[in-house]
Length: 569
Image (cartoon, rainbow, N blue to C red; front, side):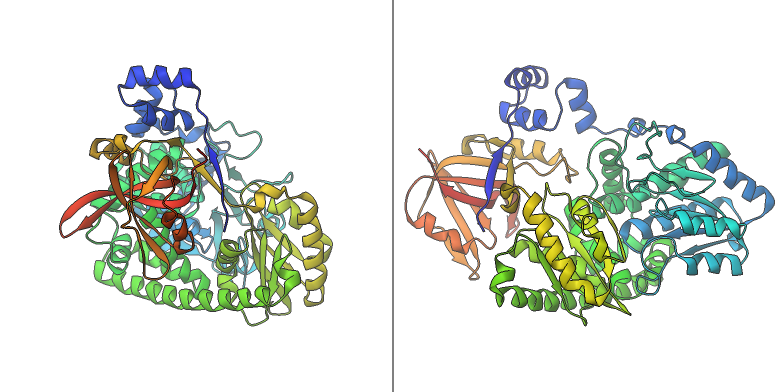
């Protein structure tokens, strides 16, 4: 698939100024300036995160109300229910808040609740509220959900149940009738950092409670491993507070993780390695998510709150098996969906994808949508039958507002929700074709053509002569990586093949290339179709990230090649 290259342009004057103050090379300074780092103090905060950089939790609107209501519940011996979503952010949020309350309140008056993906759907549910009423809970604290549950929280209020909402999703104009709403995205909330994940908001609540009751920070900083897992999995920006919390969370994951995280590391085969955010996203998070996708997410919370490692390992094995089932299922559905598109010329030529089969597993349709975008790069909706209705998930390409496109098709829908990049939706079976055609019309008329071509953002040009261990060590100190702080992408120009590059395992390319007599090896996954460019023996521009390869106990730097093309010179 052809890709477009976009090189970040940095202000040269700021680059020079930063280079003079930091005494590092210009290439590194260009990367930093591209990330908004323009002076020594900003660079210091970036490379050496401190817990003092975290904001006062009471800057969150309604935090005083939330702490007051929980304090009242403690005094009156009320039953408290922690209610959360079934994904990684939701389950870590529940585990974090529940464990902290367990330490400072009577365990017999606490419980947690996760809605079943298929019986109840996303977010606050009537079944969950009825459970609370039947079991005499008078306070529900929702985490990673609730901000849009206006009617349901109103229903709970009519039953005498108060709600505290801890959420990070974008609020609507009408807010739920909760006693307190903690959400930095509220219009009148002055909290300095707006991009907390759900677990981040829950962490702010326990920080405020710890301050209220004079509890030592060790009793809540111990949850940084869960918080980093949520930050990584929920794909929030790795900037500001998120970067600080992820930094200390990774440190904890690598030194003293909770039994649940430790068990997932064991089963993921990561025991001997120092974990990065990448490991959390691609190894740990899928196993946690699989619980809710394939079965009941309650066991994910049980995994996190279990202190006995042997018992935690048993829960982890259940998640691990769910993940194996999930991988088999999404691979099968992806293959099925691609066949549907490939066999239909009209579907191939559309600017959107909508595919539907009644028997597809609802828990993996979002993953399948993302997989289809890897082949057909365009806004994608994958639908399946769920009871009497058709339901599914949608994924976008960067730069296109998926939620607005779905909103424009609302006449065909029973329900919808989501944000810029991802959404969920439901409709009557007889409306699938009408929705598909309407969605195609909306996408075709509004999407800019360049958004249908994958974009590679390049941080800066680099010379092979600049790449050495010291340079790589500084690159490593820029971790944790993630949205808005991605691993630096370089372009090296006028590079030549040495003649030793070759295709490996049919699909990949082992690069052996040189620039001005300096040679580097590299790997380009799924790049066999570009191998002919190397055989032309012409200068190439090569886009890559830097990695470290270990072979027979010896470590060496290698290029992780993303794309190549003939040089323009």
